[in-house]
Length: 351
Image (tube, rainbow, N blue to C red):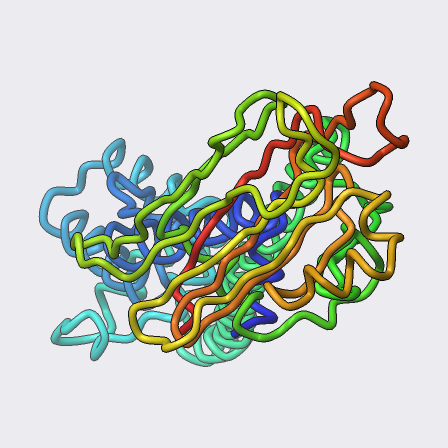
């Protein structure tokens, strides 16, 4: 199932499959089965051999009764050069004549055949062989024509599919040299863009489904009371939990407060423990004493632009991304506290 999803996720697969299915439905199902082509007003020369014999029997019977030379000549001419061979194949039994006299007289008048019985029998034998050869040739031609039609249909489908593939390739819809997208790998509690994906199965599943909730929150220098919290509800409106971001610690003295650490927390109504991660400035993170002190509040992370990290409870999973981060520039040590920090937060059901 996963293999099929990967195949159909490519932009050029669905149009090609739709094209092939459309051709099959149009040609085979509709054209050959539901509404096949029906031939009308066919010439007698296009009939099968048994129907050609019936046609000649009726022609001879009409001539014997009416003696219309023009009409019989027209009727024989539509059979072409094979008319004499088919006439000599006829017998009184086939035409339901009372005797062979009518057939013999017709052959003598129209094809100058010998009237003697012996010569007629010899001619009939040779002409019967010719007619059988014509019958076999017609059957072979019908089989070849059917096979050729199927072959041409298959070649047409392949040709159209190839043309569609070429057009998509030229328009850039298909990239044969496309490199796989970088995947995410967890390092020390946060997620970065790498070439491998040792993430949990639950996380991969959640990212394929719509998030329960998405939030954007920004801390700015001077917002001394910064403490954002958000409710997490199911699609039906049921309360599932809460998440939020607030100030954890400041450094220095004076106003405004100089925030060097923020905490992100996730509360799950089905879990007895609230999960917390502490986002620290570079100066504070590199200070062992500060990092050890803040570790009591939750897992400590060195916050960086573009950084991802994941938090999980019993039934919820939170993924946060650092959209924007700027350090303040003042008399305090470099990279010690934040001027601005923006987080994008998404929450999924864990299962």
